[in-house]
Image (cartoon, rainbow, N blue to C red; front, top):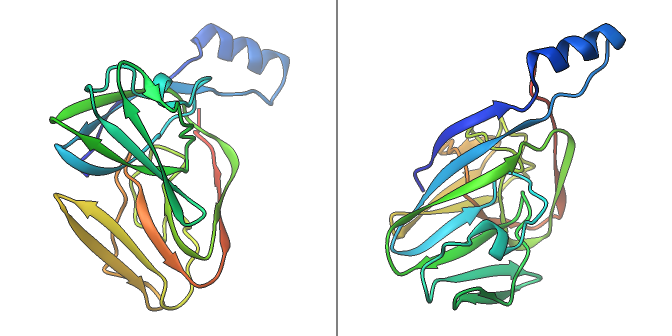
Amino acid sequence: MRTKTLLLAAALSAAGIAASLAQSNVYSLNVVGYVNVPINTGFNLIANPLNTTNNTLNGLFPNAGFGDAVYVFTAGAFTSSTFLGSWTPNLQLDPGTGAFYSSGAPTTNTFVGEVMQGALSTPVPSGFSIKASQVPQSAPLATLNFPANFGDAVYFYRGGVYVSSTFLGSWTPDLSPGVGESFWVSTATAGTWTRNFTVQP
């Protein structure tokens, strides 16, 4: 899925930063912004790249097309939701969780929220699951510290076809998930995707 990050802006004024520095050498930097993610007609593997106070489908996709559907894969089964003026049921889609989005027409969804920072952890169960980066960053899986055992595979759904990569000591080929894109994971061993991510001031 082709994605384009339009803006990730620091939500602190220069005066606020200066005041924090004057009081202490330790301060917090919250980064908020928005990301536009194109959605093609048909099925798309999507993800929520920013954290909000309302990570439900109604909060994330308020302007969905009538009849659009989302399929979340949990514990070996899909749970579906359909947009009929509002999402029914109103499923949760937190950063790190992926889902299939079925759209009746091409569109672009705008995600608005805060960049996740600090020690981040995403459980990866054995078998098949759909995962995504908790932060809006596109980079190779190794750079993103994605856990892998020999023979593990990931599957991206792009342009109506699957593109796969297998871990054979390194990812072959070395694919990068896009911002707002999720992917299938196939692994025989459960693990945890851990990252320590900080936006530098």
